[in-house]
Amino acid sequence: MIEAVLFDLDGTLLDHAGAAEAAVLAGVAAELPGREFDRDEVLRFWRHLERVEYDRYLAGESTVHQQRRNRAAGLAAHLGLGEWPAERADAWFAGYLRRYERSWRAYPEVPHVVRELGATRRTGVITNGEGDIQRRKLRAVGLDLLVPHTTASAEAGCAKPDPAIFHLACRALGVAPGRAAYVGDRLDVDAQAATEAGLLGIWLDREPSGEGSAVPRVHSLAEVAALLG
Image (cartoon, rainbow, N blue to C red; front, side):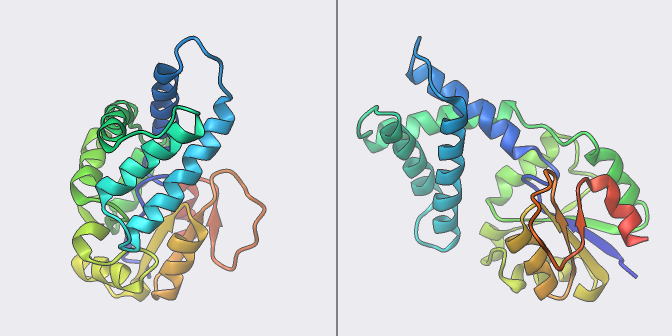
């Protein structure tokens, strides 16, 4: 019997990729007025920077501000804009964040699915990130009351895929790991990590990758209720 369902936030409940893409493309267009650029290539490089620098932050190798600065400066160098000083990189990233926040959206099926699951089970979020901004995302898209508990890595002192953050969230909800499910869009740090922590890990593979997996897989959150029975 699954008594609680926990969710990843970015890429699972909130369309982080869509918001980030809109924000970075607008930022690049402002830096290259009147010039054509390869949108797909820019997005691929930005996603690479985000993954590398955010993983370094989670590993304790940089601060949240340093990883943001590194991403802005790295993109500028990639675009041939030269070596940006810290102040220039910080200013660009501040603009990126404003555009990113204006583009926050939940995936279309999310409110209904979370409300349905929450009618019979406790719900919450486990997220690698800063608690304040992650809760602000939930409020902005109207999910804060549907998933009332958020376990954020910056507050927990541990981050996915560490089993400790999953166990901390389960204790907060008053359930044993074996009676909780966790749904996330990354196979490794979400579904597999949750499984190794003793939860029912579910991989949300929104754009079927063809990658093999030993954990349950869904292509939409709308499939989770049926999976849980």
